[in-house]
Amino acid sequence: MQTKAFAAQSATTPLAATTIDRRAPGPKDVAIDILFCGVCHSDLHTARSEWPGTKYPCVPGHEIVGKITAVGTGVTKFKPGQLVGVGCMVDSCRTCASCQEGLEQYCDGPVGFTGTYNGPLMAPENTHGGYSAAITVDEHFVLAINHAEKDLAAVAPLLCAGITTWSPLKHWGAGPGKKVGIVGIGGLGHMGVKLSHALGAHTVAFTTSPDKVADGKALGADEVVVSKDDAQMASHANSFDLIINTVAAPHNLDAFTSLLKRDGTMVLVGAPSSPHPSPAVFNLVFKRRGIAGSLIGGIPETQEMLDFCAKHGITSDVEVIKMQDIETAYARMLKSDVKYRFSIDMASLKNS
Ligand code: NAP
Ligand code: ZN
Ligand code: ZN
Image 1 (spheres, rainbow, N blue to C red):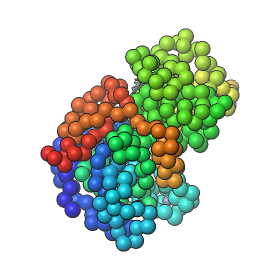
Image 2 (cartoon, protein in one colour):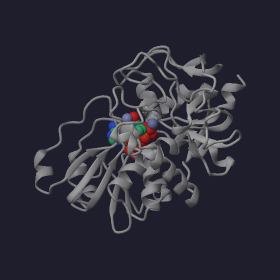
Image 3 (cartoon, rainbow, N blue to C red):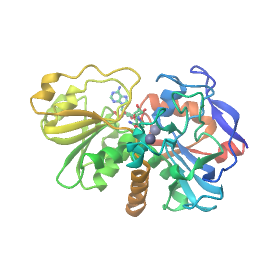
Image 4 (cartoon, protein in one colour):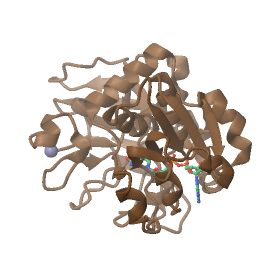
């Protein structure tokens, strides 16, 4: 099925209109009319080849929401007309220990999980993501959406920004009695603040942008710290159980590990294209502090997060844009000028 899309043809050419082929639904497939797609910093890293392995043409987008237009004969979970989402994965081996545990993002199969775009990494196939009018996905990787249809633009970012912060918050036990830091108030960070607050943790947001302090509190942070202010940083020394670091650029990690209490963990989810300066070992060994990483989230926990958000009225704070304005959105993202996620209205692509 010929489908309208927006693609980068190389690392240095702006994204532009193109046409891609979407498969007709097989027995286990769900065909989705895409209504909105969030803009993740990973889209930009990939389109510009900032990470290794981008294949072109590259159609980014892994925060997809839309309506089912058709289902295969073997589909049991979904019906046409239903509102659904697709996140960062569209397939995995389904048989390894990680897949069996519902942690498909850590698939141990020969090519790992199949990314919604630019995947699988080691095979010639190049999947195309949500900057497109429609997508066909195996029902295992389709999520049910129980928010109201009017909220869809703001639900889209839950499919990556939401789950990528939810998964480590849950894994490391964020909740009442815990002090949780969220570093960077961007797409991931603003969802981290909302979710940590909703889980009942004392939530502190760290920002390099003094103009985001009031917003950080409105998002649910109990405190907002300007991370360039040494005195503000020092007042939080040795106090955090968990810090989720969403920053998309290399920076001094020691400034944050020194805020962890004994046995505290800083989880890196931001994935800069060049390394952070090496962290100070003494800062870790003297208080048994840890630095960990976390990748998106599995399908069962993504559904759990979506249902939690629907129940608690949580969505992303979005600025809705036209597909044609994606390059402006990327330029603003690079200046940390996103409040707090761009969401593309796919009508702009379909009507072009
Ligand atoms: P984003 O919207 O651009 O937010 C990043 C935020 O980091 C900025 O808004 C800014 O917040 C802060 N920041 C930016 N440059 C900084 C610098 N030089 N020093 C300190 N802080 C800086 O990006 P995003 O979509 O949230 O993605 C963030 C990162 O996570 C990206 O690298 C992305 O690829 C990665 N990611 C990882 C996963 C995963 O599974 N691990 C999933 C999705 C995305 P302030 O203005 O508040 O300082
Ligand atoms: Zn993402
Ligand atoms: Zn697997």
